[in-house]
Length: 406
Image (tube, rainbow, N blue to C red; front, top):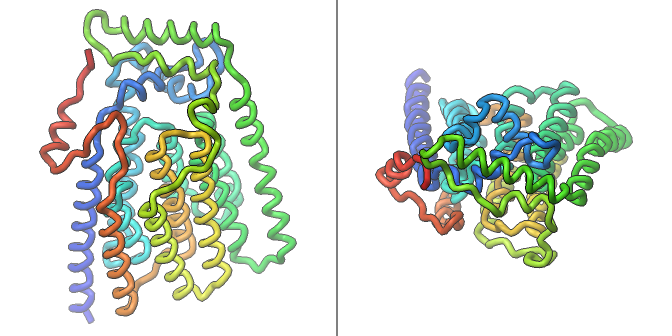
């Protein structure tokens, strides 16, 4: 028996090492330093009053002062926020993979490491949903109990903070936080009646009324043009003069006008649903089917299995709906998957904290891995027509390329 445990431990250590290598290697593929567009967005603050999407810049300015307008300070913050998710993934792989303490979660993390989305993740650093992802990681680490604060308050607050960061998170983060609470209500460990569940779902809906009001106000209310231009002049001056003759990042002139113009951009992006690549949908379905299989087999809970399938499907559709108003399609394909991924992790950690696998499960897992590897041959398009870092040397070259742009 001791030998069997030793062999299991050794095999698990090897599996964890391989998973970590693949994870970090995939992350390195899409690494880039924050672009001028991202940096220009981050220097917007509340210096002349409330502006949507200015909370990050305001906090950054409060911490760093005028240095916030120097490219390296927001760059460190941007990449630091992104690395919260990276470190969490490393932690979950080690925690779930060592001695195969949680096979479904370990396999899920491995599937992520093999996916095109892992390669894309750091390239997307600085876009506002990543602040939501960082908050979701904190939720998954510290607020997973059945207390009222964990079930209702924390997801609700995370959702509202994500809206202050950017109202686009109404599509990319709110579906996740709402569904996390809904799953907890539906699968409450106490035997609750249908009427009680409906009542609690009504309470959940009521907690999101402030979110809806904020979304409507921000979407339809345009900041006065003269105020936007005043802020733009201020930010441009700070960026161009804070370091004297030393080059800083190139200030983008197309960011600030967004706040007083037609924020819908309906003239260039007609209101219609957009097709999602088949491989992207297939990977989401693969994860849902894989997880639902383990839920049903090891919990024998039909309600949990069905509610999980419904939850991930609705969350994915919630993120998908942003394609009606958003035009960064590859980034939103990424966000759709991330929504399904976060809800799946939440469900596994809450309802399958410790699950092993038998020999029949291993055959199923092998099939899932083969499918994931096939899907992993696809890639999302990167911003600014950039190319992926193929190999560690290219990653190193990207890493040492940091510096002010003339």
